[in-house]
Every structure is written in structure tokens, then in C-alpha cells.
Amino acid sequence: MLSANLELVRSIYADWERGDFRSTEWAAADIEFSSADGPDPGRWSGLAAITKTNRDFLGAWQGWHIAAEDVRALDDERVLVLTRRAGRGRKSGLEISAPAANLFHIRDGKVTRLVYFWDRARAFAELGLSQEEGDSEGP
Image 1: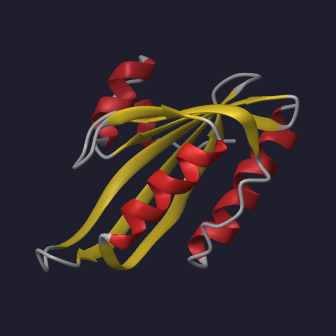
Image 2 (image 1 turned 180 degrees about the horizontal axis):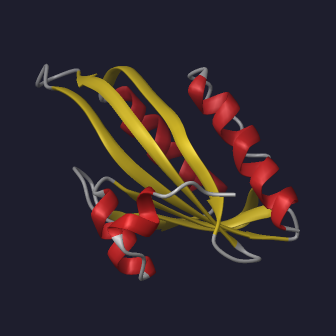
């Protein structure tokens, strides 16, 4: 199960790293997702909401890019991805390039919950990982 979950998440990032955020085939119909921090924290549920939220978010950025730096299984249902996000705000012109993290909860081959963390240290703290564990090599 661990390897199937890791492969699912890696396939999601293969699309995202190419700038293709359209697919939701990987998501459960009742997916719960949230942004724990960052410019627009909040919580949403369902495929329509994730599609709208992502479209609105991506519309606010030029050249938005996300890359997986490390993908690791935390247990049978959770996969943590250490990422790097970069882009330029369309209105502000502000450029960012920063480490972040995403936490995927997976059941029966579908993502049931997804949490975006702009602050990687917050992800480590909420997951009870030390900074050293968070920066170590994953499976």
C-alpha cells in the first residue's frame, strides 16, 4: 500500500511540475483540502471547490511552479511532500521561491484530504516531526 500511495502522489506531481493542474482523477469526490497558512488560509471540500480554488489561486500568479523535493510515506494513509514553490504575483509583482510542504491522506487509491503548508516548519510541528526528521531522506 505504501508504494501505491507514493506512486499516486508522484504521478500527481508529474502533472503539477509540468504546470498541469487540471486533473482531479486522483481525488475522492468528497475530498477535504485546506491551506493551513499562507496568503489565503481556509478549508474546502469537494471536487468543484478544489477546482475553483485552484483556478482562482493560479490566476493570481504568473509562472507558478511547484516541484517535489522529497516524497515520503508517513504511514499507511499519509504521504508528506516537501516542495519548492515559485511564481510572481500578477498584481503585486512579488516574486517568491520558497520551501513548503503538502500532506496527502489516501484511502483506496484516492486522495481524501490534502493540506497545503506554505510554512514547512509548521507542517513538521503539526506532524510531530523534528526539523532533522523533516529534512532527512524519505523512502
